[in-house]
Image 1 (tube, each protein chain N blue to C red):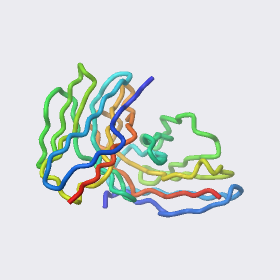
Image 2 (image 1 turned 90 degrees about the vertical axis):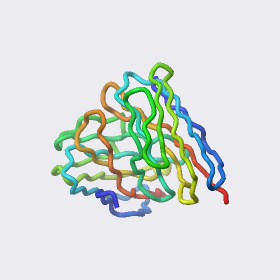
Image 3 (image 1 turned 120 degrees about the vertical axis):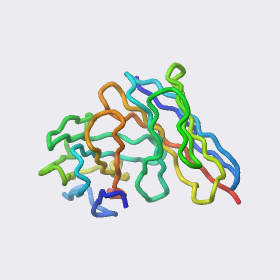
Length: 114
Length: 109
């Protein structure tokens, strides 16, 4: 248990569906992240929020839409996804964006797009 | 471009020592992290190096040479539970983590 909780753990969705991934942390951290992890590939940073403000959007397609209503919660809204979007989506949080700031990860949502 | 290289897979024997290497080329450097990730689980923090040299933490040690763009993670007295993927990540000048693809470590009895 890392203090970062993601739901659901597994999700299967069709290409026309709309779904949302949820991430929650009660570590008092100010920064939250969405990562995509595909097999045998490096973690891909998707979005970064610091004090609820989005600071990074690494050329992520618009079919992925993040939302950060407060410093403890982060959502990733999904719509009209493609099969190549199937991956493990990891949420992480850290105290802030400075150096020597350890990131705490949730266990991820295993997403399958059919 | 930014790049982190580490071996895809390594095999070692229980009770032995293994060294996992990581080389990097990044825009700036604000430290190097090692994470452990068991299959189906979250990555968990192992170590952080920002100055050259060796950081020891129990059975695990991590080394950094900034001039060579090189780090290694040393695992001693290997146990079966050490079977996992080990992820190397460098924090660049924008305080973003650049990740390697991970090294899958297989421990055999």
